[in-house]
Image (tube, rainbow, N blue to C red):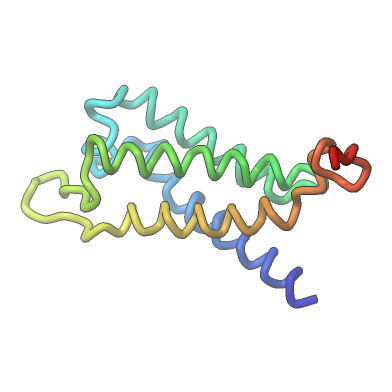
Length: 137
């Protein structure tokens, strides 16, 4: 019972974080322009939003949750690499006067942790990992 509550909580947390960032990516808000400006612009931001939206949908579909967790992990590993290699941990504001204090980077790490938990809990949804998988030992 406790694991089910944690599973729903983790999926809910991913949904809330992705749902909130979807608005900024799809409207190509000034904050998003700072992040995606040199990384493909609006098309890249829209693609990232669509991947996150697909992850949200899959997270809540029976027997597809593992794929949503996988998409979330992939998207957030990409976000972490982007932060570390191009943008910086603290994303500068559009006017350059301040930064987000690492908020977006921290949210990416939270999604990675939550999606890892969800992926582990739903690992049996992948045929080669499930209960009917052939044992090598």
